Image (cartoon, rainbow, N blue to C red):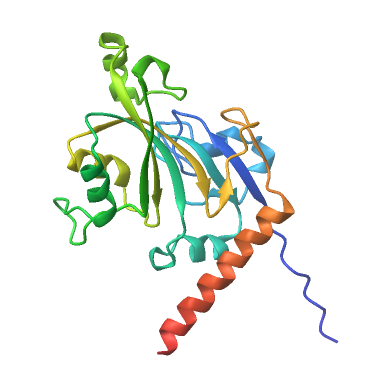
Length: 223
């Protein structure tokens, strides 16, 4: 008699990614997000997507490769929500440009945000998250400089997408925090570099999105 195969069990964690580590399993030059976990827990784990080295916020860590591939496929348009601080004048016209699409050198398709809104103006020295390493000299020289805090939602995963969007409208990103991924909000009780298991509700949301993405891809193949 064939033995009944037990269902696979996977691990899903929410990490509040700190600045200074890379979204990779290993790196010869920099600490990685897996260094936030005890050595005995790291086997098989990898980040679901990526955040730049100096960006902070929610990053899901898992060993579920199938779900990871489904959610990160570009055609599935999984939402990622960010707060970004930028130097430069930002008008409503520029906000509209970010949503309507901007042609950027080196890319065939325009870059665009799903949505953008201005949250507030504040001083550079009052930004509540770490300034990008290559912008810290600006903090030393002009701590009172006015910066715009924006909320940006993306559904694509192009490299340095937010920085490139802002540069295209004459602005410069100086800090970035991801506050939501696939409808799961960062648990603000998590200190930078700490993590927790995702809740059952959060897990079911991810699995539901993964199933929907798989069904959509299957329909596309069968057309």
